[in-house]
Figure (spheres, rainbow over the protein chains, first blue to last red):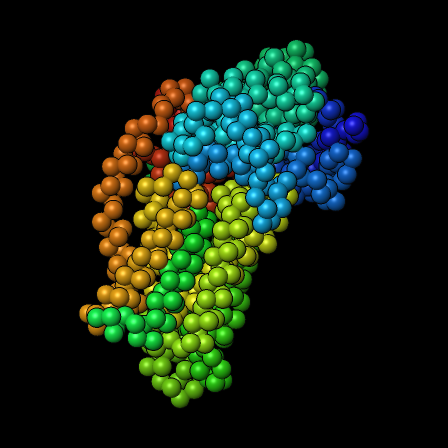
Length: 258
Length: 333
């Protein structure tokens, strides 16, 4: 097996609607490493992870996946993206099994049915996130945390070597957070690399090898989680509105005018 | 009675109704999943021009309809994919241009608007043998593609971003759904007519998703429902001397209305089973972002009603104004 670095960022910048959101970000991820990207809301962490999988344009610098620059990268089946939980319950009904099976889409050929082995992989992924008894249930009948677990299972079903997760803890109950963290730990032990965007470490703390902290789109810390000052890691502190905080004037949201 | 059912025109009508009834809800399931329920209607409007071109040039309107419908569907998809705010208006211009253009072209062909009637409202009992063969082939392509490419089309319709991040050529499959919808519109044009075609694509799906648990069963039940409505509508209209296209749509609607009480009971049970997680959403999470302006009507951020207040979508998450004793800030919702 090659030991090419699964993910290398060199001086990466992301500009959205003319506004630079991510600036001068460089780091590389070793095989089997679990990296947490921490930062406050608006620090650019979700923008960055979307850029890594091509959902946002990389405006500056280069992203390399398994040694290949991202624009020329073709082996997307090796990269597993877990988006922030969207509302899975709307539209046409779909079962947990169907959604998880769609995670194999990168490895499937059109007009070919799934093999016995692939069906087993889907069931195993559903079991792994603790939803074994619910494979045939419509996703709309699951709680928010369970839906997030479905999204993790969907990505795992594709057997990726690099997992990129966008805030898997957001709006997720504690039991589901623990289930997701344990599942990712298992994948990392099996040699997969994990990059996870987090608001705070929470139940993920034991498996994080390294923390990259972002503030206003730039890296402010890159190192082991233990040395990160608690204040810098904790993204959820309240602005002191009395001192220097920007005070929006009072206005009822439904009032006309401005 | 059997004389009527076994008359050659009736056999042709039944064949056309069968393939349309199966194909329309099949592709309609993907449209509902992509929240493009009215796409069929839009394509139908544009296809009026296609029919008129056929009448004007003396070629079979079925062929010109397919060509114009496919071009129109691809243009709609391009406008949608570009995601511009003006896209909505562009679509409206396209749809009404299609109808108006068609009416003018028909007049130029010297047929008068009456000639369009058969295509606007369907005329399944006057369908020719050639048209039956074309319908069979085209509908067959739609049904086979819709079923055999279900993994790809489902992935793209269910979560476009995830499919794109998986390296799936999303543009191709989105275009394919549009082309299949256009072909379906052209086929259903003879059965239910261009103005009612969307009904046969959508109503059976609305009916079946009340009961179905999975995407696959939603689609299969919708196809069976579309088949029953089409055949039932053709037979009823033949005996009662009603317009077949409208009768098919009414039978389909009747199926929805008759089943909706059952659907409501199932929906209530389903909701009752959704587990409650007490710590699912943080009760109070303050936004750290500096706001250069006040969220309010016309601020440019999407406003969403959220219970008793309005959230503004800001950089992918929702902000709500929170007024406290010390002043006001924004919460993450």
